[in-house]
Image 1 (cartoon, rainbow, N blue to C red):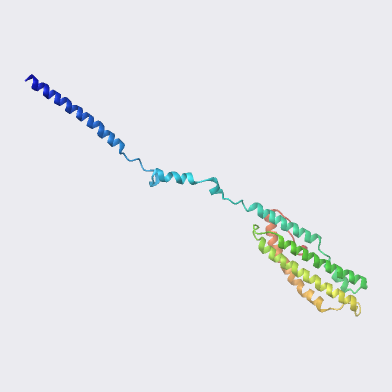
Image 2: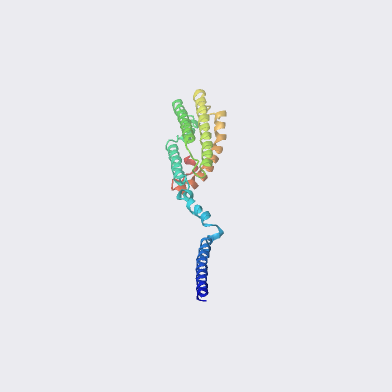
Length: 222
């Protein structure tokens, strides 16, 4: 009887030990298989990490420098060219009046040289205008087209007046008035076209000048 009781106690202790061991193992398994909480926004932590790491200052700032400084420099270059053209502008109007009054031959020849100088100046300015890079300057390309037309037409006018003056110098005048040749007519016909081109250019230029703090101009200074 005493042996039977001892056997039951022995078996019961083993059962209790087994149950305790099984309980800790199941808890460990439950802890080991628990899924991590989802990341904010519905994605996993692994998926969201590269997205935040991928942003860099260069992505937001852009690789190329701002065009603002380039535009200002181009506006200043065009302003400098306009100042050169203004300071070198030949006195065409007074030379026309001189030839029309039919003075002495030497004075007519002097006026013809003024016209030649004016045409040469326009040609030089046109060459320098073609070298300007205005691709960063808002409205710069359109303004350059108008300025090119104005200077080309002015150069053609100067050449036509020069040819007229030389005709007057060689043929003389009838009375006190110089003859109205085909060259003078051509110059007179081109004058309103050149004036309009200058007005159109000045409208473009003054908007640019106002933006960049440069000198605004009137059409008769072009």
